[in-house]
Image (cartoon, rainbow, N blue to C red; front, side, top):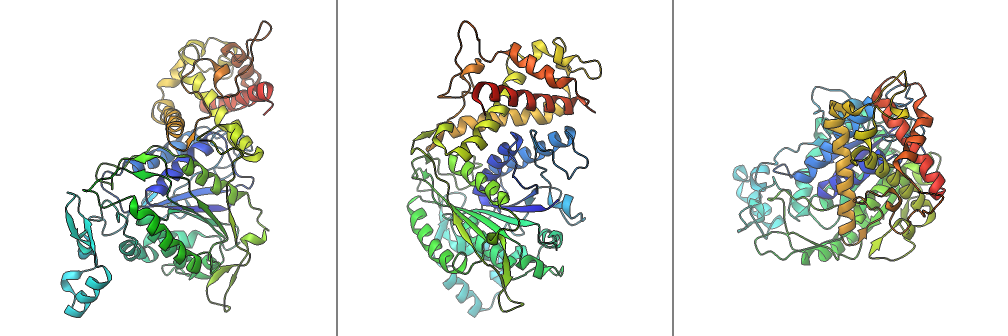
Length: 516
């Protein structure tokens, strides 16, 4: 099965991966089968709560999927319909090497240094020091919020809006062992793809995206001899424009006032060196009116922002890129001057359109294709979570009602004390609920589901299920009947049974009540 290597650069990259993981957990899958290999690049190594949350979510996803491989013949094959349909792997899974960390994040050298220490300023000649002072003139703020020379910034909280610094540090990537493993793992058949997530208004993403893109299209392969394959591998990218504001803070090196100016400067560069020279096959620019006001935290406080609709839209761009047929002209690449740079033959820029320009979006505000993608799977997963956590549901019914006590496989409340549930599935279900709530309270909001209501008929906001004398709509008794239809199938493990019957039962409920 082909792989899609997803480079997630900076804080925005981690937040988009979080949205992607929840989409995939709910059963969203591309029309074309791919393994997804996230590679997170973030110099912010000190108390980075967003990175830790995303890594934890991706790790839990893998554990749940591995324990509940419904209908999989091998670990690489995907079932047509299921929760956790897409296989998420680490780079080490794809290219095993003792030099590769078995995590999703790439650790940058120099993250615990000042920039001056990283470039070896103290050992430079007088002329080289003068050049460094010229190239990196200006000031920033250190972790105590005090003014300092740009050369003295501490990089363990990132590049704090300084892409000129970031471009120097991130260029080390092309000579690293993880990059070599990535370059070596790219299939020579041309079936693999690359996707890059970044923001354009900060320091890490704005520097990392063009730097990484240039190295790939130049065929930089860290000496593994796979450069020509890299040059012609299809690349998709989402570049996130400003979509939130920051509280004014004189002690912070980051100011919202700089976002627009930096975005304009970067766009001029991208027009010449990213889209203008056909480096990217499919480009997604995503942004929104920056109405939401975030705490101004350059990284010292852990930098844990609420999920935002723009991040969800960016995750949907990855699905769209993978949906592109392999014989599409938009994925075709060629070498310029025979053995020169790799370039897209027919590049395209794409956008996400919504039907209604609403401050708080519901499922009905999307066009039909995106509405079906989101409404069906997110509602299924929300129904699954409801049954697992509501007091009137799983704990009182498991092991007592028909679906849960088939002769070949019995599921009772004890499964919720197993490691599978307590350490992995429960954590995903709770983060899913929190993710939905964060999306709802942000600006622009995405508020499609009522996660707090115990009434299943009120789960989808703006589309309650009608009840009356002859129909109570969706009840847990009806839920049990749907589960029983699938519990008689043959399963190898309780985990496989649990995930399979709940996926199919929730699918039936939505089809009957909403014709989805």
